[in-house]
Image (tube, rainbow, N blue to C red):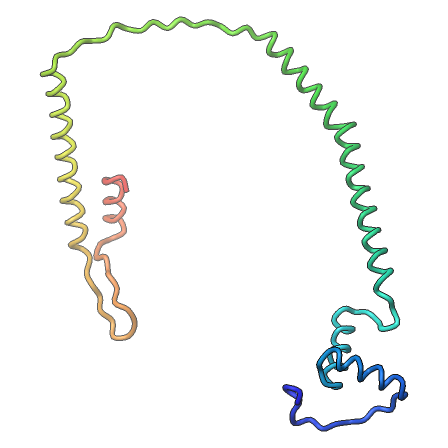
Length: 183
């Protein structure tokens, strides 16, 4: 039975005997019932917008030849543009740049380096130690600010839906926190 058509009844068509024989042979090649084969044939013609009276062979070859001719035309147009427009423009620009390069004589600038300042190991150690303590102090200050900020966050439980965190601060305080801590 044909899937989707089990409950439908049958109708008859009046067709010539020779056509019926050809159609039945075609149905056997397709391994489909006569109803399904005819349905597939109708769907094919409707989907492709062609008539059974038309021949696809020469039309497809003609279409292919037409596309090849158009592509060759586009290629010749591009070659002509390159030959008559791009290359001369490129040559003019190149000559302008060459003239500009000849006109400009690079100036030599002498740079004098200062003698390095010698420091002792103790001075160097003091410098790095001071920077270390300064950075440590900044880190502790930042940690304090973050803890203070986190204390303003509370968990809001909901009866329906997901729980969420709420920030209990004003917009100005939040902006101030962002600006002070470069966030």
